[in-house]
Structures are given as structure tokens and as C-alpha cells.
View: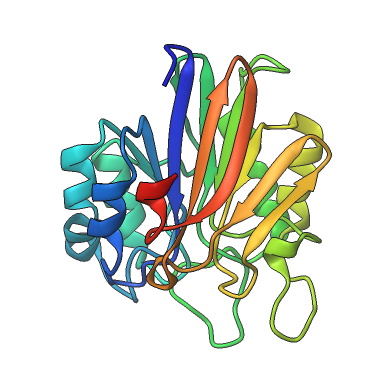
Length: 230
């Protein structure tokens, strides 16, 4: 890795399981930033989140996350207390701004950590981006995927993402948006210059691997079982 290259791993939808996490940490090599894009727990609280992130925090210096709709609201409180949360806030590393939004739009079965109206996503992100220089390198971390990409297509074929998140991407043009929530919406897509990636639940063995170098990003979905070979 050259001195100006930032390596990023992003995972999503653990739902209380650390299956594949140890393998990923052992095989991913040198990682500068580790991102969790929500649903750390399966209706669990702060203690569950603490347990699930412990190994990653011990091995990676920069770990940030947003809570998902299946995390109790106290998970977001704990992430904020620990300095890990990107929900409605931002962190800057080597000139790259990381910001995010957690929770989800209302689900058919209702879950404990939802946002009632799509436009709320936009207000949360605008608050996080306030003061960021236009055109500055940015990475968006969102549990809910943006609307109308491969990452938000549900089993029945409809797009179920957020139009407000898509609008934010179209306006701010981040390098990438890493998301989750829609388990079947695995894939990489683009909104203009922005790469959008949803690897699907970690238990299925997939994660996002990205490298940022000189303002450009390369994004792939990889398998934990092949990570050592990459």
C-alpha cells in the first residue's frame, strides 16, 4: 500500500452474529477504516453491540458505524458515547470525510429503529455535511440504500430505498455510498460518479473492499473465503 492509499472494509447486517468476522479480520490484511452499516444486533442493545464490535476495535484503529432498524435505539446512543457513530455526524481522515445516517424507513413487520418519513434522511445528512467544502472527498455510510439502484431492489422486484438519500448523493457526489438493509440487494451500482455498494449480510461471507488513492476510489464486493488471495 502506497502512503496515499486508504484501505476500507465495510460490512452490514450482522444481526447479532459474528460469523465470518474472525476470518475477515485475519485475512483482510492492513485496513485503515472499518465501517459497519447497520443492523449490528437482532433487536439487541448496547451490550450486544459492544460484544460484536470488540475484536474489530482491538485490531483496527478507525472503526465507525451507524445503527440499523433492527438495533434498539440505545445502540446509537452507545455508538455516540464511544465515538463510533456516523449518524448525523462526520469524521475526517486524511482529507476524506466520512458521514452517515442509520435507521430505516418503516418496514412491513415494524422494527424498533425506524425513521417515519423519507425526507428525514435528507435533514440528518444535511446536518452532517454542514460546513464540508463542496467537492471534498466524501464517503457516505447508510443503512438504508438509496432509491433506484441494484442495492435497494427487494425480492418482489420493487425499489425500496430512500429518495432523500439518493438526492443527497446527486447533490454532494460522494466517492461512494456503503449501505445494507435489503439483504437481497447485493451488488455494486452507480449514481453519477458515486459508487453504491451493498455486500449483503456478513453471514453470507461478503464484504466491501475499497481503496482511495489521490481522490479516486476502487470498490469491490469480496468473499471472506477469498480475501487472502486478493
